[in-house]
Length: 295
Length: 295
Image 1 (cartoon, each protein chain N blue to C red):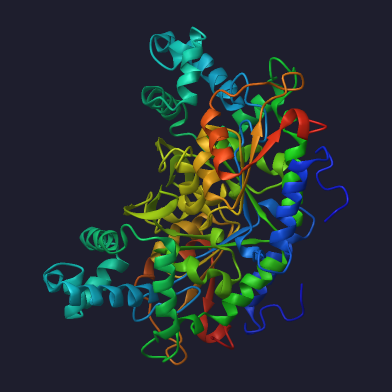
Image 2 (cartoon, rainbow over the protein chains, first blue to last red; image 1 turned 90 degrees about the vertical axis):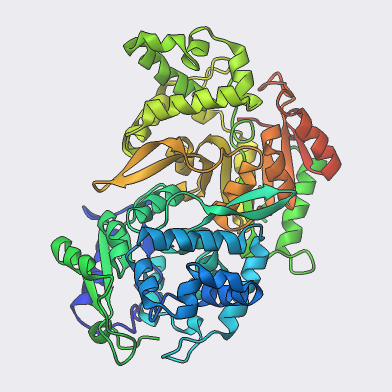
């Protein structure tokens, strides 16, 4: 193990527990895990980058929809466009709690906006947003708001022959645009909620409906199994929608956003997961105490 | 490139064409392809192993269904069980041509047989079959009927930093059982037709219906894009159900089964693909002339 492993992590019990687990599964003996089974899966929003005041993908999507409303003002009468115009916080709350009406309205709007588009068109839109949009409180571009300690954790696992997958409720194709440069993992290692695509006239073209379940809650282990044929050895998350993924893993870390000064302090959308963490012995990562650097 | 690359391939135009392509995309210059884009996808039945008199998975499935008919003789009245009892060759023909009624009957029977099972139960059944079943003409176990020249081709591509995926109309979970020992690729690099799974009480449990489209025809590039976020740089196939995948790739090889002595000689289910090969300049691999060793 490299001397500098987890350099942005403060010395203490959390760092020791993670290093000890990696050491156990890679050292010959009763706790050894063959390389083939070394799958690590990480949530994205709030686990690998900032998710306040809303997951960054919404900033991209809402910007796109604001342009659509300009083209077609009648959209402003219905959801989710109405919530966007009115800056209605209860709508985002409905996303966090997976309120069925909210999710349905969102999925219909996604279908409407990108139906018939090619991956190249979508990638170009996401790249345009990445290059310009800034997080309102921290004033930095979103790609700069990836947690340095988590990137070091990916590096540590990779150095120990783990295969890293990101598994987010967010859009698979959205994350795939920046996965290779941001996380050092190939597009095929990104798992997320995704649309159906068809191969028409030699091109991949986006359909209107999602493929399979949403990648939240039980959908996370379902998507992970579908993509990899395994459940994770190591998992990282930060919210209630990660509970099933973290429960399915042999070793789990959960990020506690308790650092109002350097990032944000909140527990909304994560209360049940911290109860579960105590019950099942997951390793709780305090941003304030366990990370000497955040970005 | 290793001296012994493609050792089981006879010297000649086919081998030279493959080696030249790999050389081109890995040598700095106008034809260079970045490592991230080096995706290679291969069909399985008839491309990586024997598919006559029927794809080996049918031998496994039909054995399973024969046991089910013993338990419940009323099954013998309906398809696909009836065709199995009557050894009806037109049924298998309907599979090859993707006849809708045949496919529907098959999918219902798959759903009925494995609904509610865990991946561990299914894997144990496939391993039992692999250890004992033999191909009727060649008298060898199916795992021994993988084409040695194709394994060498996978090795050549891997040595040149391609990531190898198998993409078959056959069952994803069936192939994942033996992928790692047979092809040297992880389970996550196997793409195929698959059932929906649910995460229930901490376990992955198989559902009744397929997830998305069947992995044949246009379904192949659709599944490849869903799994990897890319279309292939290199693809290998042997049949009409591979046409869209081979068309989507930058460089394609198609295996011609013209070796009645060492394997089989047939063109059924592949006529349109050889027309397309001539039209689009795919590299046709003659088993008889291009392979000095088959198994």
